[in-house]
Length: 632
Ligand code: 0RA
Image (tube, rainbow, N blue to C red; front, top):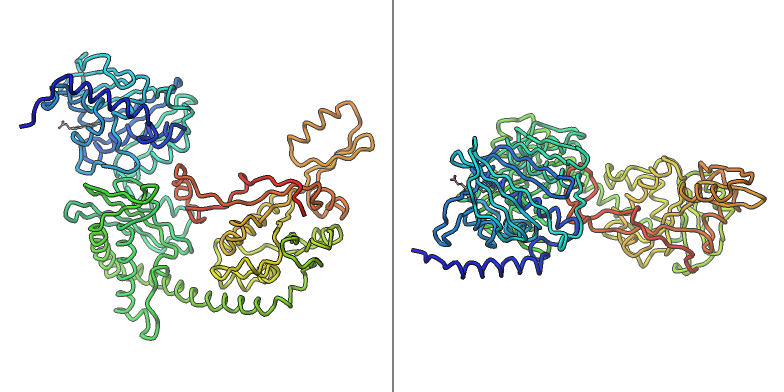
C-alpha cells in the first residue's frame, strides 16, 4: 500500500514544482518566444490526442481567443475527478499541479515520456496567468480554476452534463511568455499532421482573432498523408499500407513510389517527427533494400551480371510515412529528434519486409513498375558517376582551355577576382564593355539552364551552359568539389529584375547549392542588385533599387518635373550605366547568399509543401546579408 501523503508535504511539492517551471521555463517548453507559446498549445492538445489514441475520443476543437487565451475541447472520457488515494485530492487537481503526474493517469500505453512534448499540463498551468478546466463525467459538469498554477477553487460539480469530455482554457502568463502572437499557419501544419497520424480523428481549429478556421479529418490516416504529399506528382501504384503490433510496439507505414527523383520519407515516433531519423528508419530502409533486391533476383528482373540495388536506388521517387508507437521511447541527438530504441529496428524491418513482399507477390504490375524505377535509378547512378568523372577529368585538363564565351580578367590572384554570371547575350555584351577588366570576368549564359532539382547529374553535366560554368569556376563539382581551385572569390549572379530573371537565378542557385555547396558555405556567392528605375529631375539622375525608395524619392521631388524610366532588363542599360549602378564596387549593393538550417519550428514546412529541396537545409535569399562597398 502506498502511504497517504500529508497535505503539507504535497503543498511543498507543488510549490517547488511550480517555481522550478516558472524559473526555468526553457527547460520545459524550449523557449519563451512564439515557439514556446505554441508549445503550450501542443502540450494541451497532445493530452487530447492521447485520449484519441486510446480510442476514446474522435473530436478535438482548438480556439484562439482575441485576448490570447486558448481553449481545447475533446469528447474523451473526461479527466478523472475522484479522490486520488496517494494524495487524498482529486485526480483532476493532481494532474494540474504536480509535475509529470500526467503519465500516471495517462490514457494510453503510448504516453510520450520525454522528447519534445510530454512535460504535462501542469507545466502549462504553471506558465499560465489562469487556467480553467471543465470535465463532463458521470452526468455531471465539474470545474476547477488555477492562477499561476495554484488552485483558486476546489474541484466542484456545478451542474448536469450530457456526454463526456474535457475542456481546458488558459491564458499564458505575460510575465513569462514574451508574445501572444500565435501563428495560424504553423499551428495549422501541426494540427494537420496530428490528424493524418490519428486516423478518424477530427481536429477543428478556429482563430477568433480573424475568424479563420480549418478542419481536418482523414479517413485514410497516413495513407491520406502519402496521397497528400504526392498530389502534384505522378504515382506508380496505389499506396501500400501496413499496420501491425509487434510485442508492445505498434508499427505503421504507408508507401508510394512516384516517377520523380526526390525521396520524401518522414518518420514519426509517438507522433513526434523524428527529423534526425533513428532505429525505426534504419529498419525501414533495410527492409526496403532487402525485399526489393530479393524480389528482383527471384523474378530475374535483375540479371546475374548486374549489381544489387543500393539503398539510394530503392528510395528514388519514394514517398513514405513511417509511424511507430512505443511505450518507452528514447529520444537522442541534440534536438531530441532521433529515436534510439534498439529493439524497434528489427520489429520495423520484419513488419515491412513481410508486408512489402506480400504486396509485390500480389500486385505484379505495380511490382514491375517499382523494380523498373529502381533499375533506372541504379543505371543513372552508374552513368552519373562516369559522366562526373569525365567532366572532372576534363575540367582538370582544361584549366588552360577556358570556355570560349568567358571574358576573363587579367588579374591572376583569385582573392582579387570576381566573375559575373549574366543571363543573355545583350546583357552579357553590356557587362563586358562596362566592367573593369582587371579583376572582373564575365560569363554570359544563354537559354534556360536545366532545372537541376528534377534532372539527374548525368544530364546536368551534358548541358553546355553548366559545363562552361564548371570550367570557368575551376573547382570541380559534387563531392569532388575543391575550393582551392576556385578562380574567383566572388561569384556574382546578375539577372534581370523580372520574373524570368528570378527563375533563372533560382535555377542557378539551386545548381550551386546542390553541387557546389562549399562555395556558398564559405561566402563566395552573391547576387547583383540592378536598379529598378532611373529618375531624372533638374538634370540630376537618381537610380532607385526598390519600390519604397521610389516612393520616397518621388515625394521629395514632388513639385519638380520628373522623368521616370523603368528598367525591364539589364540589356536596357548602356555599359556605363550598368557599371555605375550594378558593378562598381564603390557604389553597388551585393546580396550575399547564405545557407541556414531550417529551424526546428518549420521543419514540417518542406514536408507539407511537398517541396523537393532537401528538408534540413536550404539557401535563403530573403535573409541574405547586405554587402555594400566591398573592398577590392
Ligand atoms: C486518465 C484516465 C482517463 C482519462 C484521462 C486520463 C483523460 C485525460 C485527458 C486530458 C485531456 N483530455 C483527457 N481525457 C481523458 C480514463 C478514465 C476512465 O476510465 O473513464
